[in-house]
Image (cartoon, rainbow, N blue to C red; front, side, top):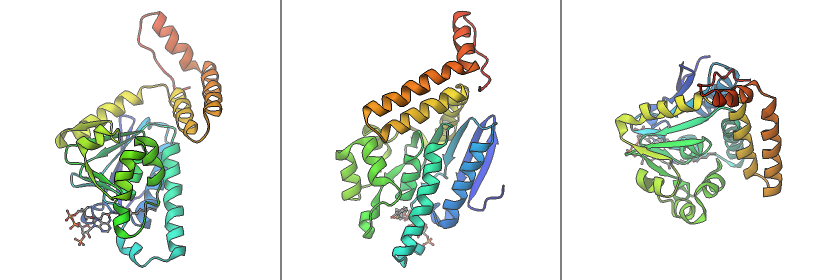
Length: 259
Ligand code: HXC
C-alpha cells in the first residue's frame, strides 16, 4: 500500500512505521491520522508481522496534531478530528501484536497520545514529552486525560495536563511514562532488540495476554479476573502451549507455530 506521510517497511517479522513529515516535526493532519490507521490495519492482517515499531526522526516522534487546520476549526470539525483520531488509536491499542513507540525528540499532544496507545515506550535521551494542549486553550482530545492518568497516576499526570509541563526522558522514566532511556544513536537498535524478543513469543498467547491486560483496565477486578480465566483456559487448546511445555520438560528450545 502507498503512504505519503509515513514510511513503512517489514524486516524479519518486525514492522517499522516511520512518521515522515519532517518539516512539520511530524505534526498530524487528517491525512497522517488516516494513513496511520491504514498501516495498523495492514500490520494486523499481515501474518508475517510479529511486532510493530513506531518511530519518527531524531528531532521529533510527533509534535502533536497539526495546529494550522485546528486553528479555525469549529465544533463539528473538532468532532470529526476526534472521531478520526479515536478510531486510529483504538485500532492501535487493540492491535493483537506488541507495539513499541521509539521516541526521539518531541512527543507532544496527539503524538504522546499515539505513544500512549503502544505497549512499550522507549525514549532517547533527547526526548521531550508533554500534553501542552491547555496552553493552546484546549485539552487533549486523543485520550491524554485518560490514558496518561491511568498509566502514571493523578499526581504526575496533573502536572503535565493542567500545567502543560513538558518533561524530559529521565523524568518520564521516573514516573513510569517510558520503560527505558537510551542514547539517541542506540534508539533504533534497542527498539529492534525489544521487538525481536517480543516477536518470538507465541502469537495466540500474546494476543490473549494483551487482550486480558487491556480489557481489564476498562472493567472492575471481578470482570477482569473472568477475562483472564477464559483467556488462560483457552490457551490450553493451542499447539504452542503443548510445544512450550513439552520443550521445557525436554530441556530444549520450543518451536512455536503461532497456533
Ligand atoms: C503544526 C507544527 C507543529 C504542530 C511544529 N510545527 N509543531 N506545525 N502543528 N503541532 C512546525 C512549526 O510551525 C515549524 O514550521 C516547524 O514545525 C518546526 O517547528 P519549530 O517551532 O520551528 O521548532 P522548534 O523551535 O524546535 O520548536 C519545537 C516545538 C514547537 C517546541 C515542538 O514546534 C511547538 O511547540 N510545537 C507545537 C506543539 C504542540 O502544542 N502540540 C500539541 C498540538 S494540539 P514552519 O513552517 O514555521 O517552519 C494536539 C491536539 C491533539 O496535539 C488532538 C487529538 C484529537
